[in-house]
Figure (cartoon, one colour):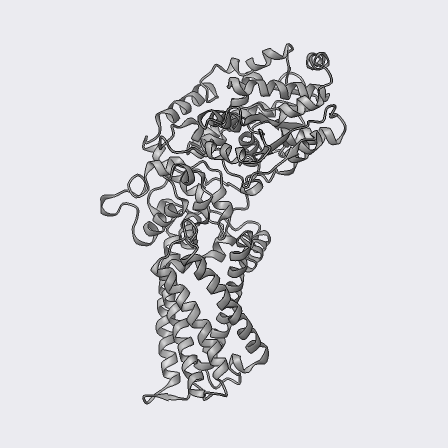
Length: 636
């Protein structure tokens, strides 16, 4: 093939054309990127430079390896192939460009090098196959939340032209030189045009996503630093703005969102899309409209259960919950909140619990034990049980707390509680946007705990577990913090608890969001069930993909936004009820127990499905005789 740089076209040297195109397209590309960077620099600062090695590993696994996309095998493999085809062809393009701009350099064109020609050929063919799979999925088997937009069609068309022009050009070289030359120019012009178009399109995520992954949160569910909330783009942090640039609008977040699935008010994808439009075009108050309240409704903001399913499924590590928390803070500052939430916050401020009960009533549930539990403030205990609000005050859960106490005593556990000194952990308060109240509750609990001698803190509430383990600042070293299923699993492993009656029953198990996705605790509850002898049948959505009960993020304190539509808890119990042979849904969270027991009633599943806490099965299987249990509780 003649050298494109030295060939004349209508009397104009090819090198002049390629230089002109490159200058214009790179100028447009750089100008757009610089504008985006300036926007980021004008926003609030946020520290995301820690643990660089760990962050590089994330890039290797989830950018180069497309880790999260591979959770969907077919589309994940197709996307992985398209990605590496894109990488190879980007290398080939820049190689071609350097050779064309500087023809005097003693280097060949890429398709004149055997190994590069081989890579471009086979990755091009594989890439075309991947594009076909992506197109068929988008236009014929469109999943929820994936749009058939003009922008997406343009990008798929451009990728196809880039791959086809290269493959046809390789074939034509040495056969039909005019075709080879035409394909070379078509390839270069399309790629240069793509470069200029990219930072102005929805596919800006191709540039931003590697940075989004690198600067992703290393702590699942990490909360934003204290602020007065945000509605204008300069009030958000640069990492939060990066979310808008990195979003691919693939709809994966929407497809797993319980708020969208049930009430249809909140779509994480549409929320980020609106955020993107605000970041790129305005300041949050265009045409007299506020971003928070007008563009994004208060109903959307309060609908989030903070289950983190959206962020966990996002291939580019976007963080939806911090955006929502920032907007909730803004609403709180402006007094725009649900009346029930306002009352709950008042209760928490006055009494340290969400029920508005006297602190002295916190340990009232222990009356049914017939013996006083140790006071961890007054005598040393090895295990300090941080009971939590629902386990202490809700009548439906108090019986579960007594079962926990009896099993602990039966296993010879040295444990005590904090009585009226315990305060709400603040986990849900923080996610409502009340950072100041969260800090007050946290500091009171830390002050109390610092005066106790417990070696291990154990809790039955996953929300409390997460706050104590990951969000409290322990200046003298964090104590060992366990969920009660972890502790019981250890007790059985050590032989402190013995299964005396294997249970002949079939159950399914619900993974709490704050135990599973937030903290990766999946095995201990399942090991306990196996030790008890029960048959476990998993729901379709389990483990990391478990469906939220709808209580988190303060939702348990709010009125349902859309009457008549199924709540997340109702969707979940229906899912459990479809499993053949399953009559019992096992939970390990007080809020799950409350939500699902209510949902069983509202869905008419009474008599078909029973909701039980795992401790009920443990007590049944390990109890020798009722009198022995009472003696053990008395000894404690």
